Length: 124
Image (cartoon, rainbow, N blue to C red; front, side, top):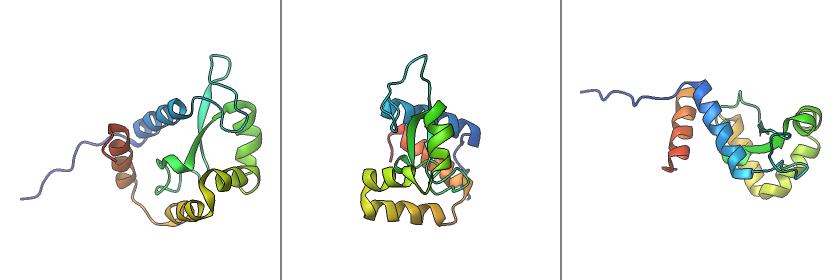
């Protein structure tokens, strides 16, 4: 007898829930240090972009940052510049290399969503 797949979130819901979790985890812009506030809403920045399913919901790949200017004008345009330097310092060379391998592997969207659900429910 085949077991039914567990009920999963949509990709959009997983993105929303994970983004909230990252912003709560960091509580401030990881680039400039400015705290989250009404005047400074934070966004969830993906170092390896969201098309990489293996790191889409990976806490090591994501950081809370100010939307303007830190995300839009700096880190999004400097993935192989300042943002990469930050990730190397944050993770160290070994963990950065492991993150890159996870980003470059083939990974199913369904599995990424399940990983996100486990992480946010404390099962990871």
